[in-house]
Image (tube, rainbow, N blue to C red; front, side, top):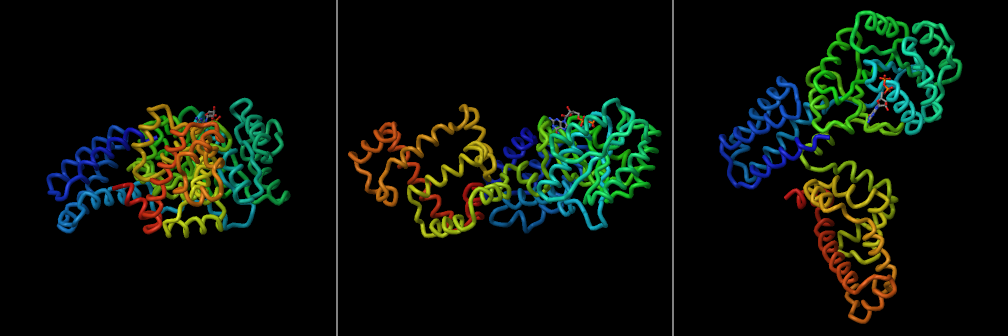
Length: 446
Ligand code: GDP
């Protein structure tokens, strides 16, 4: 998602950043290109216009242009405006400050991914937030809709309301609430019926169920692939029911990202979740700060750090940080890094998340991907070293290298390559240790 927009903006800003001094006309020129890039990504015209004028207002001040790093400042202004456009200050987590069961009502057109998203959110609440969730399908129109939810419920191990044929949507909603209360559920999710297009009957039914069930959240599910139609659908729904948030599905297939970029600005409804695949756990929260970083090729440092800390226990991380700061980075640490890389989904995944590394990842991908097998070889080389060699790689002379190559089933050349890589990493770690994560971002973003 956002790939081509990200490429375009990257090129525009590289031009800006490369220069020491900037004039108003340089900024204007760059912003004209940004505007075109946004429109090509299918961002709604008024949103693109407003965005550009906001950035222009902030960027064309004497302070920015006369500063030491005008290009960087402009990029920062664009970044902040992007975060705002995506709904930066919104609270996107669900609000459960209510007497249980809290009702979440799912609405949307048929085929948008409503039923799938209902199960995805239920699973997430149950797994991550330890909520006891009950799902109920109120879709009495589409044959087998209720069964579909029951099947998803079985997959996700989330309870669903037993189906009683012939009940009206409103009666099912009432029964679900009652079952939620009696069964001690924290959350009741109501999956309402969809239609192929918005019609009066559908809106009336949804409004009626909304009144009857008083949900804490009314989530509208829209399909990112429908682009600006998703945005206008949201406007229409919002006019009839108090939509509290949007779930945008199929962003895994959405190369342009226009709907995601325009949704908040046009409708005022924050995107709370995004569907990233067909699997039941393919759901992410939508975080404007991260998205903006990704779009601008500044990487996704927050998720990188989070992912890393998930994989590494805290004590270990602290020890590693201390060593780094002192410029101590031995072969054991390198082996640790390799282990981590493998558990985090390989080099490719990490590069994609590092600031400034988007381009490098692309190069690597084009070259057929960074071979994770290579990492296994390198780990084998390290484990063929003696303890002393691992602590002090300077000990590695020709005969030791030969022994290690033999022991690990590799060649002396490969051993040399690893030693060189270690030296480079150690250098980088030393610099990193001084500036912490911010230092790394600065260094890599250049
Ligand atoms: P509903 O009619 O709105 O309830 O739509 P469904 O939940 O039945 O979804 C329709 C189709 O979209 C199903 O085949 C889902 O697997 C698929 N789908 C839903 N969300 C996503 C998503 O985020 N990514 C992808 N690739 N497919 C999705």
